[in-house]
Length: 162
Image (cartoon, rainbow, N blue to C red; front, side, top):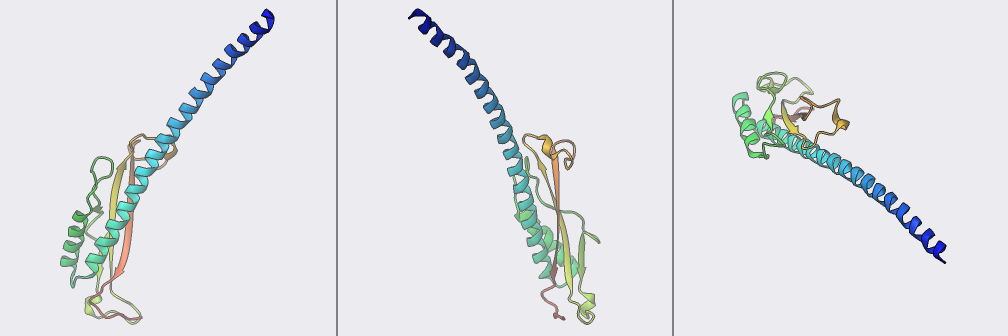
């Protein structure tokens, strides 16, 4: 009978080490996936923020009658989109000249089958909280993602042709 009890004790001791290994491996995988999820969430939030800011700035610029007021309207609209500034930067106009900002109303006389348009380009940088190696090809400075977006809208106050 003593042999049987001894055999049970040996079995319990050997499985406790296996359970510890399983818990350690599971914790490592969970932490890695959580870090990747955190980075992916920050990247998606930055892309969505940049997309909506660019769309709104282009729409605001398209409602104006000249390039000066259109640029001012786009810049004003960019200030409306507020991010934390730490993980996701404020959206900014990439440039105020061609090709990043184009206001083309054709002097009020667009050619046949052509509508006047506005092009706006914006950018946002995302500092990844836990830079995971999956993003290594697209990272700037080993930690920052740069998102750029360009929208084109027809100028609303002009006649449409087409």
